[in-house]
Length: 215
Image 1 (spheres, one colour):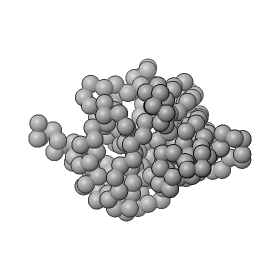
Image 2 (cartoon, rainbow, N blue to C red):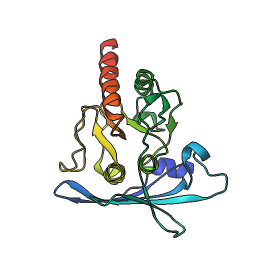
Image 3 (tube, rainbow, N blue to C red):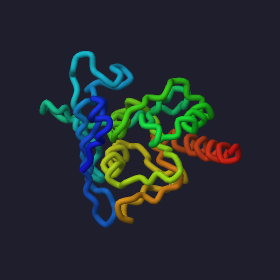
Image 4 (cartoon, one colour):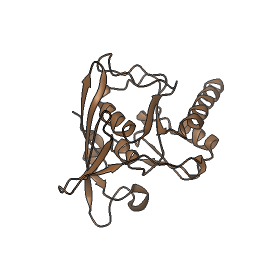
C-alpha cells in the first residue's frame, strides 16, 4: 500500500498501489490514480480540461491488464504502445530529481533519437499511463545510493507486463521482489514495449558507460 505524499500534496499525480506476492512473484496488481485523466496524457497533459479524471488499473498474472474509470464505468483491456521507431516514442521519468538522473535520461533519449520532451510525473501513475499506451518508455535512474522499495514498483510492474510491456533493471534483469522491502538493482529501472527494449537497453548501457568514464 503506497501513496506518494509529495505529489499528493502538490495536487499532481499520485497512486494508491496494491500488489500480491506469491513466492516473491507479483501475481496481482491494482493501481488507483485519482488525478490521472481518462484520456491519454499526450492529449490532455497531466490535467484533463474536462475534469474527467480518475483511473483504476488492475492486472492478474496471465489475465491481461484492464483500466476502469473511478466513476464505476465498464473496464476496458489496455495494451502498451506498439511504437517501434524510437524517434516516435515519448517517455516518462520521475518529477523528483532524486528519483531520476535527468541528464542521463536525456543522453539515452538522444542516442535513441527521441524527439519529444520527457513527461515528468511522480508515482506509479506512470506505470498505468504506459500500460494504456500514453508513452512508450519509462526511465527511472536514481542517483547512487538510492534504494528502491518493492511497494513503489510491484503493482506497476505487473500492470505493465500484463499489458504487453517489459520491465527490467538497467542490466536487463527482471525485478526481483523476493528479497525483502528493497529491490536489488543494477543502476535503475527501464520499461518499454518488446520491440523497443533491445534498442533502449543498448542506449542505456552505452550512456551509463559514457557517464561513468566522464566522472
